Structures are given as structure tokens and as C-alpha cells.
Amino acid sequence: DAGVIQSPRHEVTEMGQEVTLRCKPISGHNSLFWYRQTMMRGLELLIYFNNNVPIDDSGMPEDRFSAKMPNASFSTLKIQPSEPRDSAVYFCASSLVLGAPHNEQFFGPGTRLTVL
Amino acid sequence: SQQGEEDPQALSIQEGENATMNCSYKTSINNLQWYRQNSGRGLVHLILIRSNEREKHSGRLRVTLDTSKKSSSLLITASRAADTASYFCYGPLTGANSKLTFGKGITLSVRP
Image: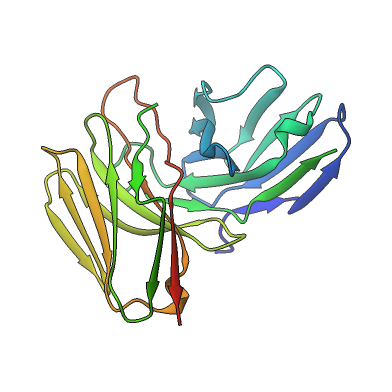
């Protein structure tokens, strides 16, 4: 298996532009997580899905952020409009079953977002 | 937030020495996990210890869990330069309103 795939790996955009980050979880995994990592705030959970259904989106910073999971093999995180403070590394992770005792998460390589 | 809080924030040791990192959490857990992150990479799962376990080993890693103190420690024995990374603890919680998240991590530097 190729692991969790994220695209793009790097994104540089200007303030006000729409940004879409993409994630393909490991085949057969039922849970998907979006995280944001910055030096100041560390690794923050933004939202997670179980069986394509959003379970907890309380970590989404504001209405400018939205996430979808139209099917078991694809998820997007969209920021519209983007702001400089959104600059961070965004990670996607997947897990076999949420809440199961062995719910190890597998992380993608991340997308480094820079908003100018 | 019910995040794990790691201690110390940064640790620098000589190759061959042991590294001990600690984690505290605030409420009940089903299990506690430790992850490693190399610079510029995603997190990689190291080891999981269940709430009914007190100690677990995996290669040069030893994890302990004290549920009465709500704390865990990760010991890396005979450290190597390749162990240089950030280490995070993660504690998925019981309860319908659990918040799943990581702390800021511990930066370990192993000097050759």
C-alpha cells in the first residue's frame, strides 16, 4: 500500500485565494483525520470522519474552513478565503476503526501551505 | 482540550545514553500512544499501551503508564543519532464528548 497520499505537497498562494487540500486515505481505513501543525500551536485536530461522516468539526478554526469526504477514498479540506495566519503544515491521517483498541493513525506527508 | 502534555519540551543527549520523556493527560483514556515525527515528515506510530497495562516494550522502546497519576513515560535506550526527532503522546479518550488531539511534542536531539 502507498500509505496516505496528500496533494499538493507545497502550496503558495496569496491572501484571499481559495485553497483546496486533498487526501487519499489507506484503502480499507474507516476513519480520516485532518490536522494543522504550527510552531506556536503544535498539532491541532481540525476535523475527523468516520465512515465518510463528519464526527467532530469543533477544531475547525472558522467558517472559512470546510472539509468533505464524498467517498471512502477521498477527502478535501478547503480554505476560502485564505489568510496569512492559515500558513501551516496540514496533515491527513487515516485509521482502521475509530474507537477500537488498536486505533493507530497513519499520517500522510503533509501539505505545507504558505499564504502571502 | 484533553491533549497530552509532554515534558520536557526539549532534550539533548549523547549517542548511547538513554532518553526519558514524560506525558501527562487530564481525563480517562482507553489507551495511550506515542508517535515520532522526523523533520518535514508526518507522524509515525511507535507504540500503544492500553489502560490496563503498566509497561510495554518494543525494541529499544519502553513505555510505562500510571493511570492513577495520569502519566506515561517513553524511554529510549542506547540512543542513536537517528532517534533525533519530535515525540508526541496521544490519548484517545472515553466519553461521548472526547477531544482527540496531540500535544506540542518533545524535541529530542541525539549528538553523535
